[in-house]
Image 1: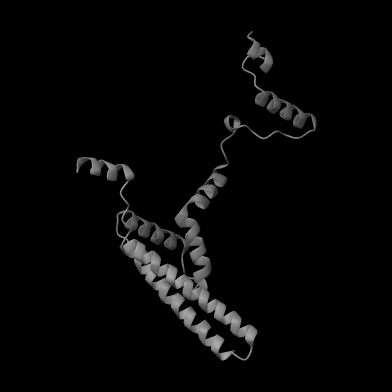
Image 2: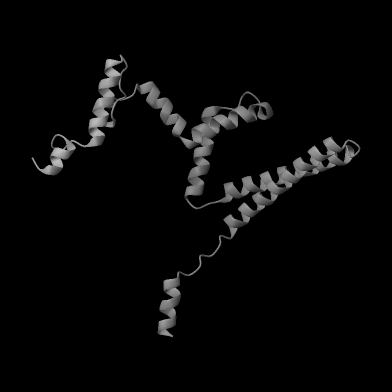
Length: 178
């Protein structure tokens, strides 16, 4: 056994593994079960695995949110399965390079935000004698206006992505040849 191995304890043993073993022993002696190591993990219950998969699935989680919020507007007939399928289809279209669904959504959102701005500004004007209410409505109007601006900026970024700047190496390489 080398001096390094003696310092560590047993051959191949490190302070971290000794500490881990001590923690396990203390948990067991206290009547508690230690957590499973990554290598010791058992396969999950199939139902729990399915639920975790659905929770991690972007379209499914967003479809649930969409159905929960849109049911009051579109009625109880809004189907979670259909909403998930539509979101998946939209994702496939965008994945294939067609950004028209994103553009349409952003244009619609900007229009809705502009309508919110106009309504909140109108309410602020109607409540001008009640400074607190007028202030609250005007703040909401300005927040909607700011979100509308951000939405339009996002749309412009999709339509005309910024051009990347040339890397300094490319600039220097061009100067050497000239």
